Length: 204
Picture 1: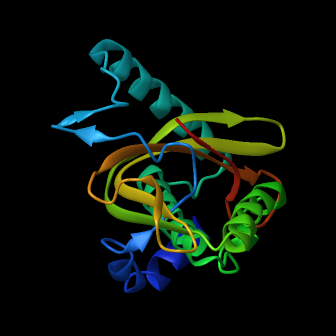
Picture 2 (picture 1 turned 180 degrees about the vertical axis):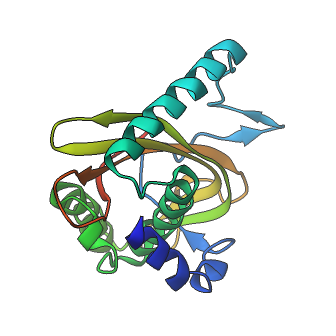
């Protein structure tokens, strides 16, 4: 929570330059489109199941607070969204030094491998982050040694990939798509360090 608060203050001005500018993650969903108001990967919501899920999350949150009394649901989500933008910006810029301390080494390695390959091919990935539609806790786990929280980020983006000659090789600069990312954060229970670490990412 502490690191998220620090990051939020540090980025309060920087984030104004993130939204609406070209940023991006390189993944397999460049061709998922939003056309004529119909999103290609929107899933219908079951109200009953959603209500049950909210109740379960509240119970899980209470369990986390019993272990980490400083945990605040809203602050955690605000911080994780800020961190999401920060990682996004660093990935596109090809430099994750500002956030590497809070990313699991194996995850950081994967990010850097993609950056290295992109630079090798002189490719340019473009993502115009139009809006973050939802940031929500999906689930949480409590083990003997750690707390884990899975967060879903739903954002509207314009994504494209260009080659070294500035030719478009994937995506579409004129169409928004809905991108869904799930990130898993972890904090060691007996560690005095209050920071959460990004240990897993996936796109759905």
